[in-house]
Length: 371
Image 1: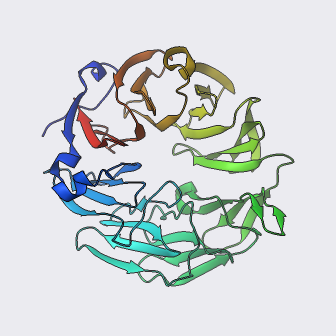
Image 2: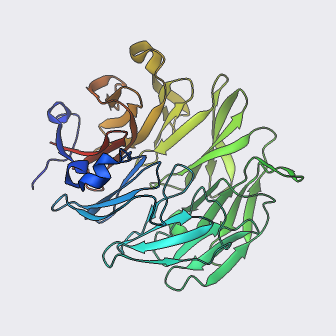
């Protein structure tokens, strides 16, 4: 199928391609648990993965739209907003977490292997190295970096005194970034963000802000920058760090509500953010200024929860959704709402690597869209 790259010129012709739950068994559809809490395309564009709040996992072949794998919570793979989903950059493998174990699942052979019980705590992220040979996780005793094939521990990184809230590989995998989390019983608050050398395990730098707890981390694909969002009740702020100097080059503040999503453009020159107050904003990293903002309250009343945030392949569109109402497409340069598609209860939005297919997940299941 020869789909067009989704962009501002053709977005008005975007149509539903297939409702993937139509290809599931009646048992799965009738369970009313096809919730699509998370949708992800594999980097090679061969499959789309959908998971639900009920711990269901569905993997669909994008050539046929038929399920390669589909199970409910009775099968021990669980993917939720608290349990991560990472897809290998080259192999047909994904990683998630179930009952304090990491599950490494091959969706071609339909085989799974498990890291031993108690080895892995509740995870917020288990990133895979861009090269595919390592993966990282937190086991409450430290951060472990393991060999992807054998799961043997290559490095143990110690410094945080509580479970971390985020792990991200940066600089092509040369750096691992970790963020502290909340209150650890009897040990106070860990608000530090640490930068580790992936080869040696040495801590390169530690950020210890005077206010706020880290909530999210986004790295720029185009240059050596990382954006870190902090909760500093009742509001929040974002600090953009230069990974060469570890200095903050731009601080974005919002006194009313914390930021919950932050995504760099492909060239690293812009940062898109959403916050709990219903604001969608685009920032110029180069000029340290806000380019535009749009507030969900103006068009959608009290519906202010955004789901998903991504750029079109040609950087002409910013794509997101207001969870309770609509799928939204913004002219990236003008900040104008180009078009919206009524779609209730969207919980995630993802764009394929080639930019030709869009996936939405929510209470009505997972749908694919194309031009």
